[in-house]
Length: 70
Image (cartoon, rainbow, N blue to C red; front, top):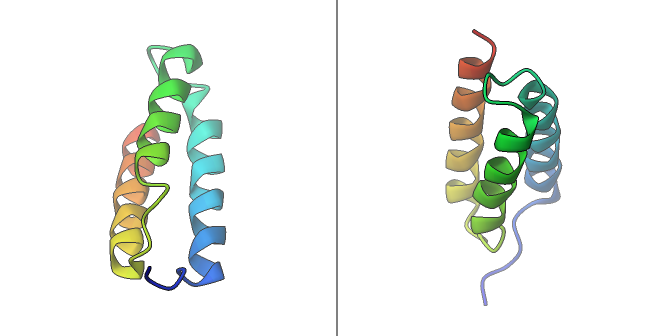
């Protein structure tokens, strides 16, 4: 079993999840549509242990965050 990723990555993942949840309140299709999909996307990668793949997921989340602000 690979070693766990650094704690700082865990904190970053939780922070971006909370930011996206907050931004999802203003999603055009509604929070009820946005939240389950966000949860499913994060849960699908919850077991990821590779730090590089986690960073890639964080970059993807930042991209989504920028798209929801428009």
